[in-house]
Each structure stands twice: as C-alpha cells, then as structure tokens.
Image 1: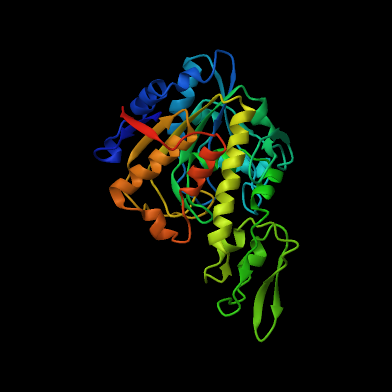
Image 2: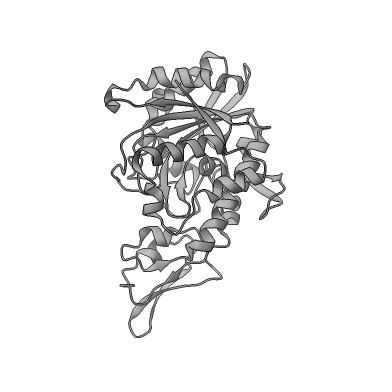
Length: 358
C-alpha cells in the first residue's frame, strides 16, 4: 500500500511563499504532532551548514517547526553531530559557535542546541540491526536518549551518493564519529599523478594526515591507504579533479551503508520520527561544502511524512518531473535509487507513495 506523502508546492515566487503557514499545515497533515507526547524531549535534527555555506535551511523556518512542537507541549532541542573531516564542525565547541554564526540559537529558533555525539564525537550507543553491511550501528547518544525526533532535511546533490536528503540526514547525520568512519571504511581514493599540481590543499584538509607530497618525476600527492578513513574531504577540496574514487562500486555501497544507519537511527527512537524535506535552494553539493553554491533548479516546495524512504523517493521524483533527472546528469556514475531500494529491502520503509497536496 502506498505511503502518504504531503506536499506543499511553491507555485509562485519563493518570496511570496508562506513558509510559516505551510509548515504548520504540513506538520498536522502528516501526523508529525503524533510523533511525540507532552513533556517529551524532541530532537530536531538539522544540518547547520559548514562555514561559508549559504544553502542550509533558514533558522526562521526551523523556528516555525519548533513553535509547533512547543505548542503541543513537547520539549524541542536543535541538534546535529560532529564531522570526520577538518572544518568548523569537528568538535562541539566550534560546531555550536558556527551554528550561532549561521543564526541557529535560542533567540532565533526558540530552542537550545545540543551536539548529539559529545564534545569530540565520541559519545555513541550501539544499536543492533540486521543489515547487509552491519549487525550494529553506532548512533550518537543523544538521539537514543531523546523521546522522539523531527528531521529537517535539505535536498541536494552529493559527491558520494548523487542525491542526499532525509536518509542521509538520518543515517550519516545521526551517527557518532565511529559510525561515520564505519560508513566510509570501504572508500579509498587515489591521486591522479597527471592531474595533480601539488597545491597541497588535500594535505591541509586531511583529518588523518594520510596525504603527503612526494617527489616522483614531479611532486604529487600520495595517499596512505592504511591511514585513510575514506571521508572524501580530499575529493571535495581538489580543484583539479586529481582525486578519484571508483564511484560505481563505492557509491552503491555507501548508499546502502547510509540506509542501514538510517534504520538504526529510527530504531533508536522506537520509530518515533517525522520527516520534512526542503526542496528549496537545491544545490549540486550538500551543505557540508563551505561555499555559496547557486540553485541548480527552481525551488519546488516542502515534503513531509512518517516514512523516510517514501519522503525521499517523492522528493527525488518531484525534482525530476519538473527539471529532468538533474542528479543523474551531475553524477552519472551513481544509480541514486540504490539507497531507496536497499532501505526498502531492510525494512526501513517503502518507495511507493501517494502525494497529497497541502
């Protein structure tokens, strides 16, 4: 039976779109008010955006959802986890400072901020699952300690999966640092000696000091496979396309691993999770990129539901229906629907959906 997915389309200018009114209607229509009970602690999972990123969900839109939770006597807190790579989100102190810089604070949003995996990403709990890649997943502890969760996810392209939204926010975003390592553990990049200019950016950004510049016929980057954790930061920062992955195999595996961690995150909360996807300011890369990226398609609207697979599948299709399969064009090595297929197979949800306009 198809899962109901609720859609608030942007039919005119985004400036004229009533985000507050539409989010209120979506919240009730999708049954997100049934996810939690009065006095329960409700995690509002958000991506605060890397330093320099401008595509992340606006704090005031986050505040509208927090108001809906508070109106129903829930106790919301805004939350995210630390990253594997170097940047402004690698520990809780820098991450919280950056969140405030981006406007995520009690004053603007109406809720306190908590970094869910502790000061240095070390705080997690093991959740047992039956997956192809994992028998247990390491989820950030505060998600397991919360009573319920609402995820606010920004639909974007992604260098490792082709497309990222609720499943990625749930699977990678709710993992402790150890869990993120586990998801990336199969990925090993290589440096193309012909393309490498020895600029040193990959050396600077590698969190494990796994890259050094060595003199062959010319100076080039060399990656130590034993030290590499597969985080992909070198790939992200290289301006010369000199860092390469075998995306055909690695990309499919990463999508499956993220889906299994998404299953674990939902299980940690007893399935008490609701999902809202923002199909606005859709960019080529995810909000982990510290750059001001342009839209790749016009703004489409908001999607909500109780099934992350259905919500993501609907989001992907809504984008493709209006603009063609832009993510396939951007990332031809990926079959993006692998993440939906695997998530269905392990029992996280269904990719069959029925859209109800709000």
